[in-house]
Length: 208
Image (cartoon, rainbow, N blue to C red; front, side):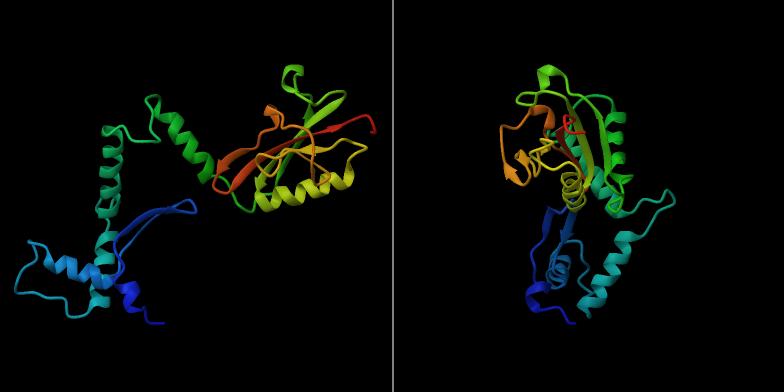
């Protein structure tokens, strides 16, 4: 399929979309801007816009001996500017903490099954409206996996007999699919990034 003139004329765009840094520009605008800059020699011209764009892409991916490319160096320079300008998302401290934060997402697998922990009693000061003999439940997975796991748990421990509550989706506390009670702070869901979450809930053991 041939790209439209509108796509080929697209302005430079740098954005974050669904967890990715996306940099794009229309190939016609790229050819125009490249030849218009002062360093472009007057005795050369772009004779095929699509082929030129592919050649430029190859150059941007060309690795030096250390494995870096012009894109790597561009991103490194931009990251240094973030630090020097005191921009968002960077704090002073041990760099190992930041590496661990990123590695946790890199090591996560979207198709990994939800991890269920159903084994601990919340401290009294954290229970809020939760009382009696309760156990807390934690689920880790994608939104769809957690939705399915909650449905399965509600099937085994239905409300109201078991008082099974989940603070899910984020910001809501549900009992058997209906909003009930007030959210407990210790049940707040956690966004792990990379499309994975930790969802928390409780159930009563009185009917076990």
